[in-house]
Image 1 (cartoon, rainbow, N blue to C red):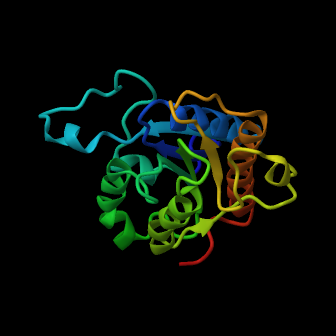
Image 2 (cartoon, rainbow, N blue to C red):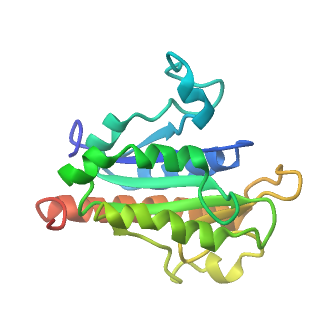
Length: 209
């Protein structure tokens, strides 16, 4: 549902070296380029951290930790992860695995969703990761948004960027900054999900369950 008359797009990411966090920030800018939309950035707690008695509300760097309650208030969801053997990270998957109550309740059904990823190498499994990340979103009944080729950067990029979602090639040392094309595609993805959420809200809410 909208909060304070704004459409809220939840961006949940896991990050090893900060690359997917930087992507999340650019995607958030794309979300907020749509009037009436707000980006909510949250980080997935590390799987090993969950054995602690209590997690800090904000990790050492990046956005606050995500909670299952955050899914209740969002009008759209964008998830991001580094590529781990052609799949999302264990930390992000663990968060999604805890969302069964929302699956039963249909909390996310009919809401727009998208995915983004970062790898060290050009052929590090970006597209496999993005496609695998869509599977739990489809099980929740969400509407998957990719990037259409009306975005010229998809043809012009020499690094990241796919029709399945935004991506980044960080290089062998993991320190390559986002290229101009990667940045524009991140923003385009955020804008597209937010735009669809606005259209759904104008049409009396989410698509039927």
